[in-house]
Length: 404
Image 1 (cartoon, rainbow, N blue to C red):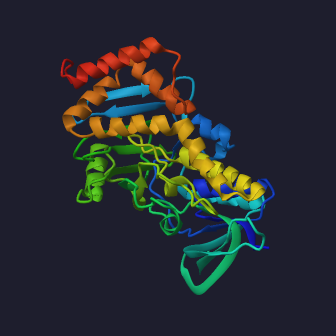
Image 2: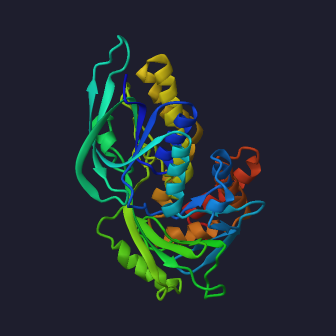
Image 3: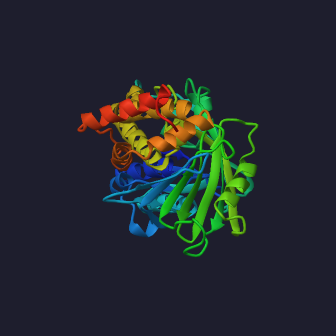
């Protein structure tokens, strides 16, 4: 017997979803989270996430009905969100709610930091090796105790974020990730009617002063607002760019509630499991969408798929079932990630191309197809003529026939 069936390392959207699904299914689950730290995140979740993961209305701090794209020359393109909305959550409270929900359904919670894992031969022939997980315990607010502990489990889910320590110790190819370094500041939101600020509008800024290869954002969070940026250029000053962005948005004098920074992966890892008893989920597996930086929905889906793969492996005793988490994710979303990766590498590379990209966003076909894909998490194949028109317009910009 082991202490637990599954130990989940990391209590963000991926890990908490894994723990919740496993606990609901009757498995003995230990959910380990460091706490005391919030990932920098715009906080957007599409309707499909709200539906698939039963997110209640009270967790939504704002409902967005418009996205504004802003170019280097201050071209402003408003894209209305028709027949729906994008929900906004505050990760500080949202992640804790997810962890609490998992505990209410039977998962055991522990505040601690993952140190290492080791394998122990299973008592029954043909079964995957048992995993012993070593932890440093922490106080409820995340301060380290001078105390360690270890627990055994049949399976481990590594949901411990970008540059996952679980992945580095157990999964082949964990060093092949690509990252954007993100930083944002959570501010007190201004009063209604303040400058150009819109409490129901997300602003996305494409400008080399704000990011040389990604974008900046101003995302409403109800009484708060997230202002931030990201870049793969380690020499680029994210704090300096955020200060510039605050000035551009008229938010220089807004009170700062907290500051957060972290690497964000933009490429799924080639392997998410070790073939025996460890599988990855969320940022640990690299599932943040390129170009958009969207991660909450993909993290929760990855957590669910990791839980399903663990259940299959536990039922059959075959560790190779863990590979199904990545196979199922990539079958449904791999093409979207590939397309978004190309989009980011090309359109975000110079201000001239950013200017052309924002102009393309004025096109109604682009707006409709983009938001349908975002809201429902699927590529639209029902409108071939719209796709053809978009292709021709893209080619005109690529070849220089269209003016930015």
